[in-house]
Image 1 (cartoon, rainbow, N blue to C red):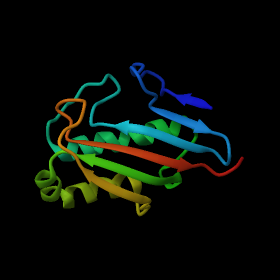
Image 2: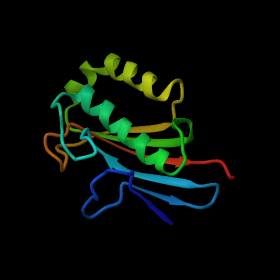
Image 3: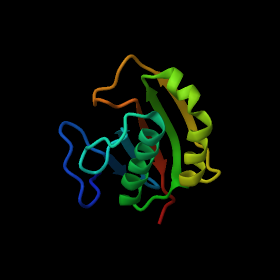
Image 4: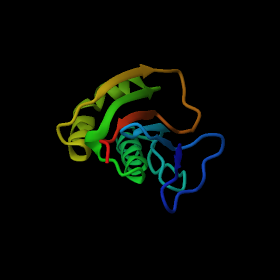
Length: 132
């Protein structure tokens, strides 16, 4: 098992950003919020947080040699349903810019709050890289 920590990122406390397991190569990406590699939020709005969280997922996946098309599953946790619904078209544009036309299995779960404030959305993913 390989624990994934992209170069230059601060080490997380109490979790791994990602784990790669040989078998093709299965990559589990922990919940990523809308903060940068220094764990700093730059916006309290849902769209910029979504974009940063998705970029974080892709950075962890790239650390394992993966690309967006290797993502099989994303689970999203959001604590602001009205803001999510209002931003859907903007979120779609962000998705297409980062993921293209790849749409993995997804779940959206609305929760009362997230651990990291002022986080509004958290994304986690599972990817399978082709055998080498």
